[in-house]
Length: 253
Image 1 (cartoon, one colour):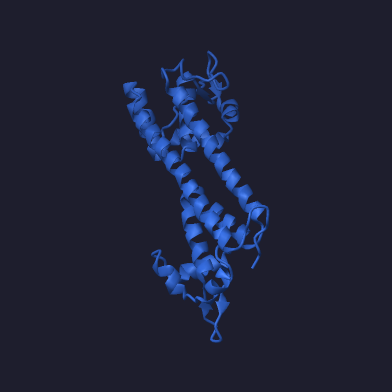
Image 2: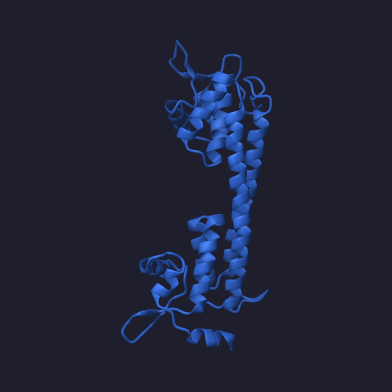
């Protein structure tokens, strides 16, 4: 009965947009993307929305900070299509990625303890006495050789050239820098942000710049985790608005 009463409340696109600082075009775009359920139309062809659409909009906007725009869109689209299990799968994957990012952060922190050419070398990526070439290093890091060349151009790594072959040769310090660059890139840092950090570590031997970067990274992961909790609560409210109960599928209306 509550749903029937809610369905009698009619909202214009501007009514949904105004409360969130959005444009009416954004509301139409969200509907076309499947983020909002399909709107009813008046006899004149104007869209009309209900509190259910308002709940969908709230859920989406709160999901975005934790899951990102593309994943939040896919979650809402799945719910609105009645495939709630798919929405849950997407949420699970997002949480798994956050957990993986936390492990990555911990790996960087371990790599920085006692940072030095020898201490920072990982068994899987350590250079031999004569160094390592670009192909083997890229393979062990799980990246393309072109990525290492791009990092070299940005000043993140500085391999020497073999005088006989002209091939790039990475010594232990280069491998350390490549590992740090790889981990920081996974943490969302841009090349122009990473370069001065690595340069300062090289010249001063200090960890302060990287410690500050890792502190910022840790804070962003925590914020993402909390945003996921907030998003889950708002999505649960939307599912109940749609009449979804545990063990049931939401309707596809």
